[in-house]
Amino acid sequence: MWHQGFEPVIDDNSRVLILGSFPSIKSREQGFYYGNPQNRFWNMLSSVFGETVPKDISGRKEFLLRHGVALWDVIKSSTITSSKDSDITEDNSIPVDFNEVLLKYPNLKLILCNGNLSYQTFIKFNPNCKIPCIKMQSTSSANGRYKVDGWVKAIKSAL
Image (cartoon, rainbow, N blue to C red; front, side, top):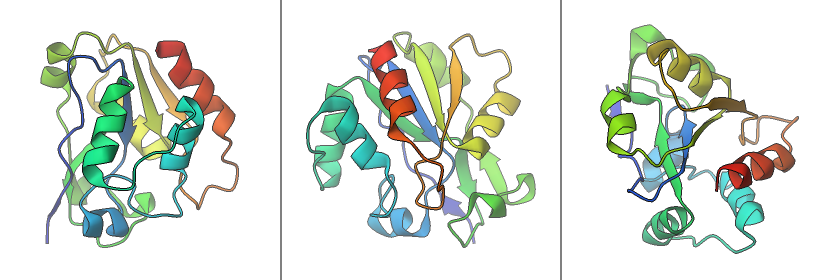
């Protein structure tokens, strides 16, 4: 069964685009990005901006856009039944076509990929992208080497 990814959170004021891979099971259940409370994503953004991130979806969208942060995933749809990036393959997924998005939002100055799969997929399907793209450490709780410092520095540099 195919699962659809989420629509992007983005507007004309977005300057940083954060790309994940594909929503986890918990995220798909909740209907929004980084729905697993063990994932450090929302805590990381709280550290970047020095304020508490709202718990509800509409509050989180407003928080992101107010701070110039766009959010999306590199995989448009997939038959994945787990939450592991290692289970996503070219045979069971369809990538997002970013060409129109990148043209439509000219204020984007930086793309940050949350982990290896998002980075590899974005680079593979967008080799001519003119916006700097950086592979960041995954905010997943499965990443024991995660440190918030790199995220804070990268986001603040683009804002």
